Image 1 (cartoon, chains in turn red, green):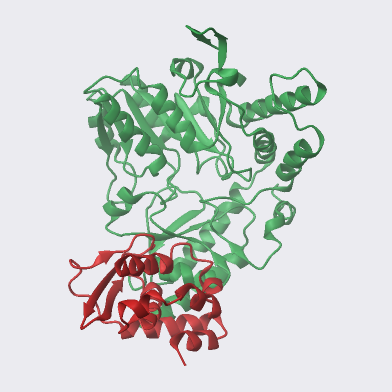
Image 2 (cartoon, one colour):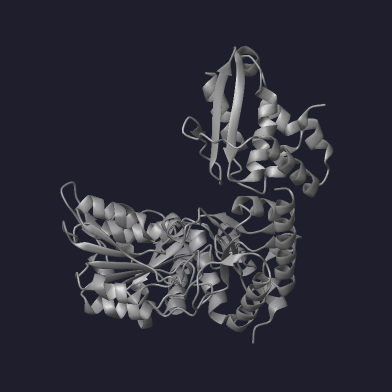
Length: 125
Length: 397
């Protein structure tokens, strides 16, 4: 079971929000924001950091908004610990669609999920 | 006498579960507006002012009738002083570009600290292009314009003063009549951004005494993509044409052009014909509307409900039915997302007034902007959802 399945299993908006808020708590605060990239396209200030440790992706980030931070944690679950080659083959958009994320997010214009994804992809090269 | 249910019934979009409280960004469109636009497209679609055939004559008559309706709606001095644009932003830019030959290096332009970017950025650009200096009229700690500071800025003999009639973030109604009188006495031209005012106040631009007044259709139950620049005829006549071509010319040779008279001189190209016709219908609707007492009751109910919640209301002073709040414990985008999930549409962010938010020491806020079609029941739904949302985010902190 992936986190995306868990999200999809929450059928109601309130439950999905709670799920994202609990995910947001799993991401440590980014103390050093200087080395991180500010993600544009988010309504709330959001920072993303992509490192490679022993050939594996190590993602960290933070956001003023906790829904965005929860989405970030969800997104990271796809990429964390993957090699560059593995990461390049991940089809995140399909995962979002399967989980019904687009529908959940449609009310909010600039949640920045796709901006975060674009940021990761630009780092992957 | 305002009949709420009859008014609400004019808006087909409202026959849904959604609670729409984002009227500061855009109001819903009224059926008479939709019908007027539909009639044009279905029955007499033609270009205006040029054709000699019946549809062209009918379309031209409808567009010019709309000009008359707008003139009456804002008490413009004459129909020639009603210029159709694509909206408030285009109208203000038309003024800023039109004055480019009239502003010299070192001359001063005053803008208020509560301006929407549309009434700030064009002046920044004009200042940059001409070497003029931009002065910002500060706010008092209560969030109203600092009129004592205004006197000091006027002592520097500015060329122009730009100010909103109503703040799109604070909802504050500014003393535009006093501002224009003082500016005029100091020899400055005045530009009033009326985008948030026209759907809520009876606007009389001659009583205001401004040189230029701008507003948009989509914030007054009309269509998108259309707006108006109006003002004093001599001030409008002074503007150099910004866009060339079409009806704005009188005579053209390969060497020379002479321009048409107002209003056409500032209306280059084919305008949004159906939207202009729709805007006339919206002006007719608003001219008959007397909802100020009803709106005041909605505002009072909202403010009383907000007072019982852990939220901060931004701004003070006389206001339209628009209130922005910040919640210390919850980010505005989180709260807006939660409200959207509960079917309640509000605006979150900086509402295109980043400098004002910076001044208030916050990155953004949540804006609740009402219209006369909203109900006390909808406000109650918002208040309950706000309380639930704040509780949820605090519980999950």
